[in-house]
Structure formats: C-alpha cells, structure tokens
Length: 226
Image (cartoon, rainbow, N blue to C red; front, side, top):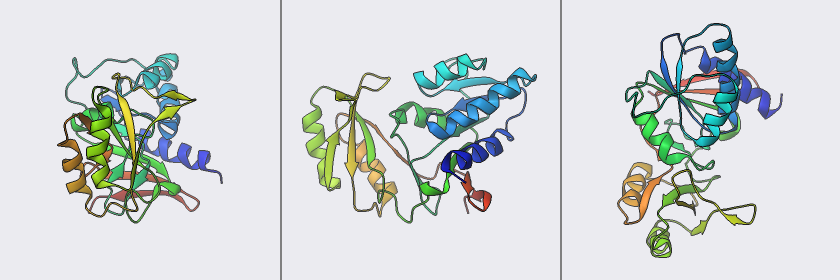
C-alpha cells in the first residue's frame, strides 16, 4: 500500500470525528487534502459544518469543494482542528510547517478544543529534527541578524526557496529552515527560539496533541497522549 493510500485512510478516520454543527479548523498539506475531499463529500450529503482554513491554499481547495468557510475573527472557539505533521515523536510532539503555514496552524490549534493530527507511518520519529528541518517564520527586516541568532541552536540555517524564488508565507514573511542532528529538549527549544527578536513563530508543537491518527501498512492506528 502506497503512502497516499495511508494518508487517505488516516484522513477519513479523522473526519469521522466531525459532526454537524461543528466549527472546525482545516489544516494544510498533502494529508489534509484527503480530509478536505472527504469533508467535501459529506457536506454535499448534508453535513452542516463551518471550516476555518489555516492557509490560502486550503481556503481555495475548500471553496472548490463547497465547504462553507469563515475565519477566527468571527469564530474564536473551534470544536476541533484536523491537521498534518512533518514529524511526530513518541510523546505526540510535532514538527510542522514544511508547507509554510505554521503560524496560522498554531493559532488555529490554540483556539481548538481538540487537535487531531493525521499522518502516514513515515512521519513517526524517535526524536524531532532527525529527518525534517524545523521551519521558523521570521520578519523580512533584519532577517540575517535573526538567522545568526537562530544558528546557535542548530547545525545550519537556510532561507527557504521555492522554484528558485525566495519563499514568502501567507503573512508576507520568510521561512528559515533549521537543521538539527536531533532536538532533545523540544519544549525548551520552542520557547527559546520564539524569544528571539524577529521570530514570528516556529514549527515545534509541544504538548498540544491528544490524538494522532496514523496510516500504517497494518491499518489505522489511533495514538493517544498518555
């Protein structure tokens, strides 16, 4: 079974938690795309929900599927959010943001009663930072100085490019991808990086997830925070 099938299975299982009348956060990324497709089908079949997208791309996809949308200014308390992850450790801590939407994803997660993470088995790691870089969103002004400050925490820092162009987030900022051998003190690292001038937010999501739904070759696994 290929990874796309595993993503689809995890996404469908997560959407089973969605009930009519809910206001839900809609995450970003390739796994969430499958959840959007499933939500779109259920909306067409009469399910009444309101979605809060975490990126412009998610908003475009949701609109094309007929999913009613609003924003956090109008709905500040969400029933749940379905989102993906780039890495998940054994304590359900995450690295997110390779898709560039980490700031809006973290704001939306904080506004949600429940954050459900969906992923395929390739995202499970012993330690965060072993496979994926840690994305850090920074303001453009003085970004090189910010990069210098961030470099004390990791082995290297690179400004993100996309198709030979500097990547710009939906918020108009840069992304610095930070490479580690592994992140052993994730909670401390999250706070310390966020304390640096010029940093908007980083992609560490610590102690925010109670349920991760993982698509594996042996079937769907529901992993709960102990």
